[in-house]
Every structure is written in structure tokens, then in C-alpha cells.
Length: 100
Image (tube, rainbow, N blue to C red):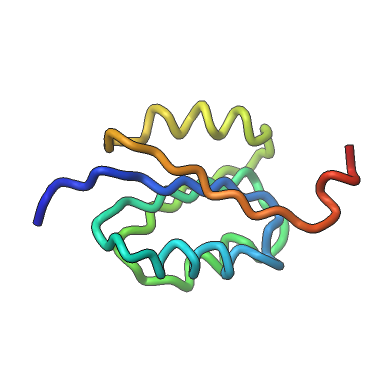
């Protein structure tokens, strides 16, 4: 199998209402040879448990007890990615922009 060229990156925090849809959309990609790095930023809901239900070997789950924010977790991800390309996965609740 050829070397992986891309890492899909998803950061989560209390995302239990949409995390499965996000994961399913990444796993349904036509490119099959990729890493899927999921970094949970201290969720207090069932986000981590939902992610752990997947048995796909491409999923690399990193969990944290403390919420430090997406910027901190994106910075952390840069040290973990081992592929030449990175694709950020973004799914937002419909009220996200209204919270600003």
C-alpha cells in the first residue's frame, strides 16, 4: 500500500449531537488511504464514547480532560500529523455564528 498523503483532522468539544455525522462523512471518502486524527478537547458529554464506537483503524483518537480551545488543539495536531497534507473537517451547529 502506498504511503498516506493526507490527514483528516477533526477537533471536538461536546459534539455528541453531530460527531457521528462528521465521522461518517470522512469515512465515506473515495480516497481510502488516509489518517483520521480526532482530538477531543475535554468533552463532558458523550462525544468520546460515540467516537470510540468506531473500529476503523484510520481513526487516531486523542482525548484531553481539560478544555483549552480549538486553537490549542490545532497547534497540538501540527506536531502529530505525519502526512504532507492536512484537511480540516468543520461541521458547525446552526447557531454557531449567532453566539459571537
